[in-house]
Every structure is written in C-alpha cells, then in structure tokens.
Length: 294
Image (tube, rainbow, N blue to C red; front, side, top):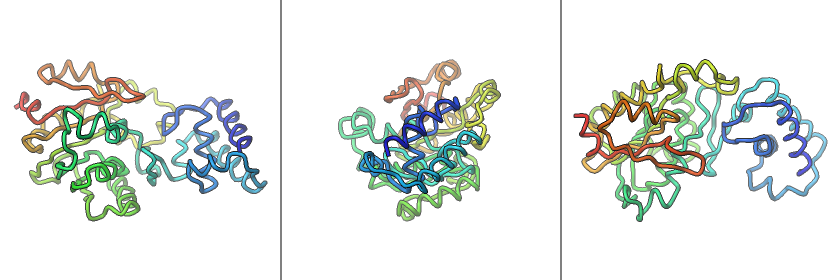
C-alpha cells in the first residue's frame, strides 16, 4: 500500500496541480484518493499501510489519479466525499468543497468550551444559524458540538440544499437541523439565535479572474463576493444583530478580506480567531458589538 500511495503522489506532484480542497500537497492528496477509491477510512489506510494491493485495485487507483490530472477537478468531486474534523460529507459539483476554518474552531477546546472567553457554556446554546450552508457541513458540526441546540441552515442554491439534505440524513440529524431556501436571513421570519455561523462567498473580483481550474470547477455563486469580496459580508453585518439573542454572537470567515473589512467598518471591534492554518481570516462579534451599526 505504501508504494502505491508514493507512486500516486509522484504522479500528482509532476502534474503541478493546485490543492486546497481538503489537502495541501501531493502526498496527502494521494493518500486521500487511495483510501477513497478503495472504500477505506483514513484510519483504514494507515492499518493497511504495509499490505499488498491487488492488480485490480491498483488499476482503479491509477484511473482515479488519471482523472485528477486530466480534469483538474478537486479530488472530493471525483470521489464524492470530503472530510472536516474527521466527519465525512457527501459532495459534488452542486456545492463548494467544504473546507472552512470554522470547523476547526468549533472543535478547538481553547476556543469553544467552558474556559472560552466568548462561549462560556456550550450546553446553553439553544439555537444556531448557519448562513450560506452549502453542503450543510458547518450546520452538522454545530449540531454535534452544541448538543442542546436546534440548528437552522440557509442557502440561496436549491442544488446545494439537495446535497445538504443528503448529509443531514446521513448524520441522523433531521430532527435538529432544518434547511431553508432563501437569501441570507429572509426565510427566517425574525428568529433569533445564540450563535450565527457563516462562511459566505468572499473571493474578490480580481482573484476570481485568476482562479486555477480546481477552483473554477466549484459553483461561482459559492465563491464570488463582488468587487472587494465583501458584498455578502456587509449585508450579514448590517442584519445580524436583529437575529441574535442579547448575548448572542456571530462567527464569520472572510478569507483575505480583513484589511478591507476593518476599513469598511471602523467602529466594529473585530476579534480575530486564528487556527493552525489561518491568521486573521475568521472574526467574532457579539450582539452588543454589532449594535454599533444601529
């Protein structure tokens, strides 16, 4: 198995592909494609590392590597799955490949937990909203973290919601995660939440023109954030306070939009939440903070 993965990684590296859809390099991408093509979990691949692979299975793996190189599609589209925090989600070209830093933040004990300065009691979180839910991954992760919460998830794309519905069912969360079709807060009818999560489209216009093929394969609706990448973010900030409980808060991912965002909203005390692989890409604001925009 080890030799099969190494050979696959060499082929991917020679092809000079672009990564960022769950992996960041050829070695990890090869491992992902191998274990998915063989119907294994990542842990299963590790257990089989020293085992031999049949000729038929090698041919299947090579065909998948061929497809990755020839199509330049993100690997998750080719196998129909992506992982966040060890949880598997169905994906296809109707949705952006899930990869939000918010997933890591939700599972980081120093960020969300009894000792955190902004979410002191996760068990007291009763209502959570995930805007621009896409595949539903953040809504589902939130339901797993905040076990006493009901979660609403909204998306403008009916196609994306079809994929999200599949994932909600696969994780047996149909009673706790409700999907809504509509434009941001529009379908929520004045509901208020203890926590709003959102990973909206935030790629600015110049960057959209330079996207490599892997990213162009994703729905434009899920990526394009307007001239400066902040079209949706502005709307969310201006409307969020009306949908938060008095002690509620907003967590939003903006990619590289920090400087433009802070210039646009100088009165807001953005608190930036860093992860192992990001700095200044996700912010936290409380309902009280957002009242500065009233």
